[in-house]
Length: 182
Ligand code: NI
Image 1 (cartoon, helix red, strand yellow):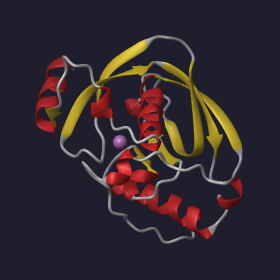
Image 2 (cartoon, rainbow, N blue to C red):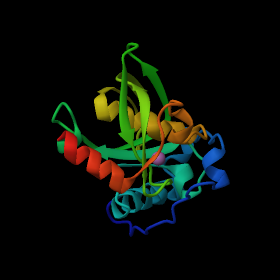
Image 3 (cartoon, rainbow, N blue to C red):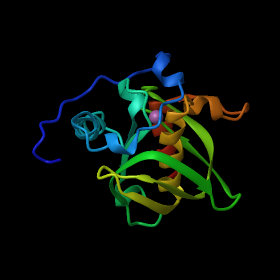
Image 4 (cartoon, helix red, strand yellow):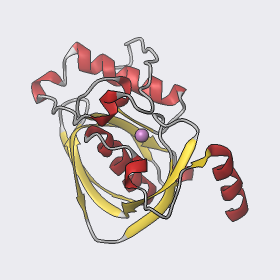
């Protein structure tokens, strides 16, 4: 993976059709293909360049069930963080009914933030870049991030999930809010 030259891909934004489609499963035999391996390298480069902490394949105009993400320790309530992760054909299961309401953003909806309810604790499973099955339990931001990215595979962007009483705010408004609360 490391000897490949990465490129920054264009990101689908706002009303792009690809963001509204249900993405296709990736046959496990395709994971080792040059196309998927290069796509993974390019998605990490594109995510970091943006910069962001998660990216789903539909956001770079590929309607397939593949997401990449990581979580810096500083943004993880547990203080551990999550290493660079490739998750193919993911399945999410909530582990209890506890809900968390937080602002989130999206590289496909630049400059805005909105409050979204997410399950606080989930289990997710799928395949990594080597075609190996794995599962993890995730909490807090880690769980929110995975739920957000998997929504992209189902044609859902976060403003659709917002409660009626909440509205989108600009990045600057959000910055002002977080400055007050922290
Ligand atoms: Ni997003």
